Amino acid sequence: MPAYIGFAGLWRLLLSGLEIFRLGPLLEAHLERNPDDAAAMMDMATLLILTLIPENRGPAFALQARALEMQQLYRLPAARKGAGLRVLAIASPGDMTAITHLDCLLEDSDVELLMLYARPQRPLPSPLPDHDLVFVSAGESVPNRPLLKQIESFTNASTKPVLNAPDRILRLSRDSVSALLKPVPGIVMPMTMAVGRHSLEQVGRAERPLAAILEDGVFPIIARPLDSQGGKDLAKLDGPAAIADYLRTAADGEFFVSRFVDYSAPDGLFRKYRVVLIAGRPYACHMAISTHWMIHYVNADMDASAAKRDEEARFMADFDTRFALRHQHSLAGIDALMGLDYYGIDCAETADERLLVFEVDTAMLVHAMDPPDLYPYKRAQMRKLFGAFRSMLLTAVESAGQGK
Image (cartoon, rainbow, N blue to C red; front, side, top):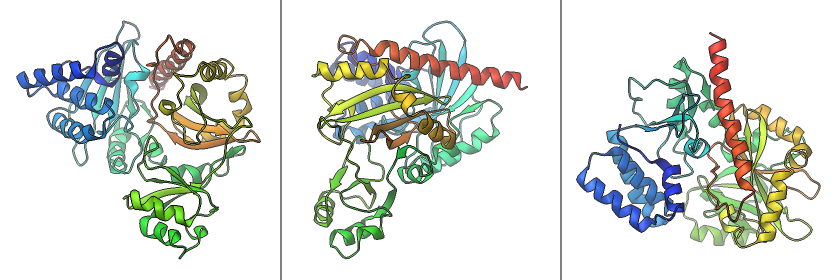
């Protein structure tokens, strides 16, 4: 197979100072000379996605589709000698939120990664390269649901250990998770319902009560399109008139709606945590602090605030003895119901110290790309997390070998 840089490698190149406007033309020139280089085409598609420019998404997905017509399998060799583990990751086409980015979790490791992109209504290529285990990297989304069913047929027949089984990933839609976690003590996750545009319009015109579409429906509520990520078209709606205003700009046909929970602390700030569970054990990934309820790490201005970074550093240093201990029963209850080997939880704490769960997903971005001069405390924490992930892979292979 042709050389392949991949998502993590391209991101790292950009962080090292190789500007997009230089790297892009280099890949374009290479593709002009080598139009059948599927790996370079996939890298070009990924580069366009990494620009985060909305106008680049269409060309990126078109390049991705062309590359996958030529080749579905892409190899990322191990960065160093060691265990010699070979992981077959079954991925899906899409943007950076579509899959578990194993190349970020295995960056600079001794694990070889074989990225196999499944395609709707297409069989997986045969024969597949030798591998030690299968990891289902495709995340839950509306377009991925039939693909995950297709992947399930393959994993059910696999003779290798399978991590993150597709039938478990299929349960991770926001409405499914809110229903699944309802009995877990110590957590708050308002019921989330998928609501059609017409029904929401009726509530916006005060023709139907909110309770007709939302079990615990009291204003304010939050609404977002079904496959919204990164806060796109996410809004807090304080009443019927706000719904009507929202629908004038949000053109989607179906939305997730849920009750809004004010999770601000006494200092008026909102704190959102990303926690990753690996083989049932929780690990701190990040903590974002903002004056606004809609927090994402990239918009929380963590770079600009030493005080915020100091608080995040304390959160990571004390995670096992404070946050994880405080919520150990809730996290264990979530893990027992999820049945996944690896996943992330975006969450907060309520005033009475219950765990407020926003989302559970396998495709949350987990990485070590933050600049070490600003975030020196993250290096050790991410090494700990990545080491646990590698150990989980090795344990799965060793356990399968002992069971033969």
